[in-house]
Image (cartoon, rainbow, N blue to C red; front, side, top):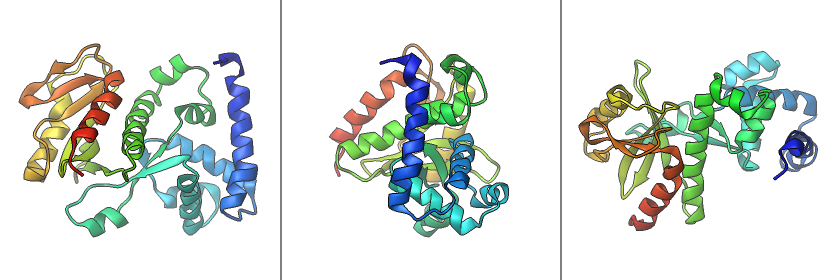
Length: 241
C-alpha cells in the first residue's frame, strides 16, 4: 500500500520475528547468529538446503542449523520441498529444497535495491520459482489439505522444479523466467516422464512469463505465471481426495 514505507516495515517485521516469535518457539541464546542464519538462508532461496554449508559459514553445529530451519518452518516463514523418489524412505532422508514464503523478505535479506534489479539479477529465477512453489503450498492449505508437492533431480543434474500430486498422478511443472518458451524448456519434463512412467501425468506445464498460453512439443503447455494459482486451485477442487 505504501512502497516508501515497505523497507521500514520489513525491517521491523524481521526484528520483531527474531526477538519475539523465535524465542517463543525455541530457546536461541545468540539471536545475532540467528540473524546471520536468516540472511544466509535467504541467499539460498529456491536451492537445496545443505546444513553442512551453513554450519561452516556460521561456526555452529549441523544439528543447530537443522533446528533453526525447523524454527522457520514451524513459524510459517519457510517451506521445505522434499525430493521425489519411488522409495518413501529416500524422500524423507534426502536433501529438500528451501523456500521463503514471502519474496519481499528474500529481497530485504539479500539486499536487493528494487524490484526491477531483483528480477533482472541472479535472484530473478529463484524468486519466480519460490512464488510458484509457495502458491502451490497455499492452494493445498486453502482446501485443508497437506501439500503433496515434490521436486525431481536426475543423477546428472537435470531437474523438474515442482511435482504436484493430483488425482494420484504426478503433475510435472517447470518454472522459467523466460518470456519466449521453446522446445528445450520441456527436456527436464520429458526425462522425468520417462522415469516416472504411469505415475505421472503425460502433459507437463511450463510456468513462465509468456503473455498467453501456448502449446509446446510432446503435448506440454507453456502457461503465464499469473494464471498458475487459479489453474491449480481448479484442478485440486475437481480432484478426488
